[in-house]
Image (tube, rainbow over the protein chains, first blue to last red):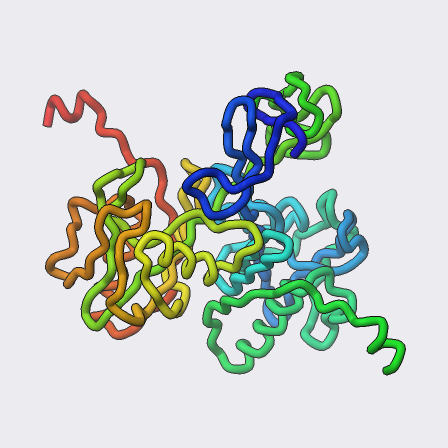
Length: 189
Length: 189
């Protein structure tokens, strides 16, 4: 943010507004406070018999890696509607959105992942413009080392554990910044 | 949004960018696409023995009406941390955040409410700058006709029903725009 979107001034200050507790972009010309808040990524885990539907990403980040259908929630959209839309966009797949399943905070990138379980309604799926391939996977063939995001790996791991137990509670968790290996430790390791 | 926050140009167009499906603010000068997404409101339902903690709002909207501690999730914050922070800010109350409880989509105002159950840890609470009063209420004294938001009424109603049943599942729902009474029906009623 370099200019005020309200008055066009470049006199933006990053400071704590009066009565607030956190720094914000404040316009010194028109006094508009520009709040910035986390975004919601919404998606689903489409299941067909014993298989789950994964999409191979055609776009960055993580081009060529596998993910569940998910993307940014849009204005004027419910969470379930967003999950349904993303599944159509990425996999041309028809699903029935089921229960809420994983809710994962990613504070270092200002995102909240919200994933639903879903029932795939037919096998007429196909890659959308953001996917290279869309495939059903048995548990033993899930490409664990080629998954795009830790949120997706966590959601799939929860699913396979819960499926054994026969219960699918909502899992609420957080993922912090991926730990960086210290060069000294790597070198001495 | 009247000016591009990236280059300061006033040449903003509201149109569907190439490869997209929804209209966005697009800068005709520098081509930046300005996405706008729903915000998360996070809070909790603090319980002390048989009572719940409510705050009387000192600010608009709904000044003077009662609510649960809740507010916009901030960048770099997990959902649980946001619920904890709002409870300190609005009620100077110490709580232990418990299980996720209600998740309510409000598509007409681009908000997602995320409410946790919580255990109030002591009775040393007091109004923060955004509250006029903070009180504990028995079920029969909850000011149902003086609640600030439908999300809060729904969360409290769920709570009192679930408390009778002894189970507190996550409730996922949506609230659409409040229906407007048609004048003709009102007149003929």
